[in-house]
Length: 216
Image 1 (cartoon, rainbow, N blue to C red):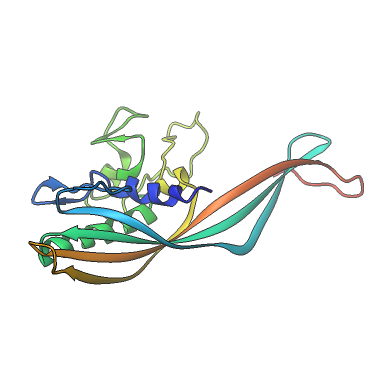
Image 2 (spheres, rainbow, N blue to C red):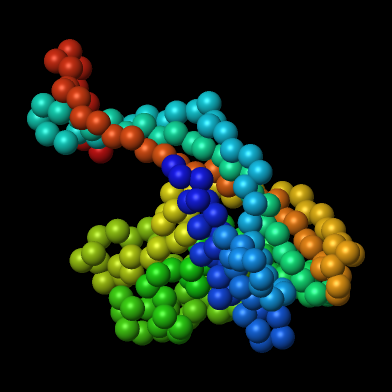
């Protein structure tokens, strides 16, 4: 898994969704020499392979079985907020936390089938909006577990966790700083995020003759 991938996850859930005074705040992975405040960027501080492997097996024919091995890789990322004032910094920080929590709950606004206010699968208003309050942080597609495309309730919802192979996200500590040497001063917020990403390898092996693997 490339180290850029978890940064793209956060860029996706923040980009065009953070605003101050009706102004969209830029979310940037690579900083340019000059950029206007405020903006959000990232710093990867640590990564490690977790000592866990999760194996599963699936029969693919009368003679073969497919083996999947899932490994977990953990990244610690600082979400950095550069702003003109304490108020601006804290407002952006709160939106960073709120959007991360919505992504953890597979909120409908992150679904790639959602085009405000409709679902592109049905051409009608998103079911999450009609089932829950549109402002609810818990509003996700009510037909999330339906995978049969012939089912009349099939919607095929997506989430950033599925799109970027994310296993979990933890919201860590936060702190702040002030660059007083810059004129005017720059107010900096730093929110730690711990993201665990799934890496899956697959291969096919013959079935052993002395036992039988049951079909799921």
